Length: 290
Image (cartoon, rainbow, N blue to C red):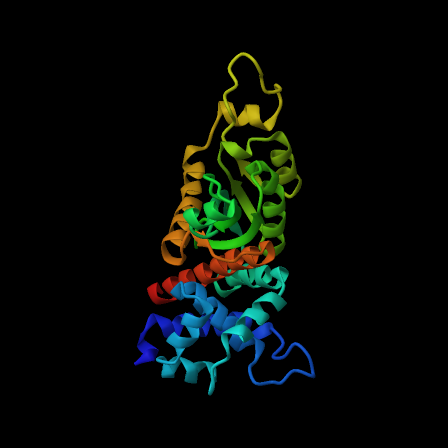
């Protein structure tokens, strides 16, 4: 029975998360499908790693899931595509952040890290014939802040161009603080910047970032927070940062490391939906283990 499967828990959690969305985008809509139903189908698309057409075809064989979702007819793939174009990135980000509210966490310790996702841009030999070939694979960068205890994504930042990881540290910590009070923020040497420590200190957050060793060429200021960390570095607390790398690995393993969308805004939404699909997967694991 579906009640005993992880699918049942997965869809129930997804339904709980999207319940705050308005059923219909306009009073003039056809009201054939609710926005919640279409949103859950987009999440399942990432979970199953299927195209829009393959997802609808797959759903035809899952009668109990359709009954659970209240779907008595399936939407056309183009309906899902139009809905994906219509939803905002801010909405997806808000739902990702709300996942932590389904746990009992009052304060969080976060880890910040970034990883790259490849963009699928077609066959190299076909693009070579069109004169559009390039040996360098295009990619987008995803930076995330993760609750190191529950391993849930709190905030995310997507960039389409190569940029230093340090640019996203303060925005991620700031957004995480608005979702749940942050007690500690941990990052690798890529985030070694005095401004990051000053920002965290202004919010009452303990920042643990290993300072780079510049040798004799550049020295940290005597009273800087980076210099204090260099003298007494809390290794035990810093070791929790590896949980972020675990989250990035699991996301790529379960939901793929390739982005198939062609337009930038759709690439961003696809990555954010991967983050949401991962969070629901993690919530299922947490609920089953209780």
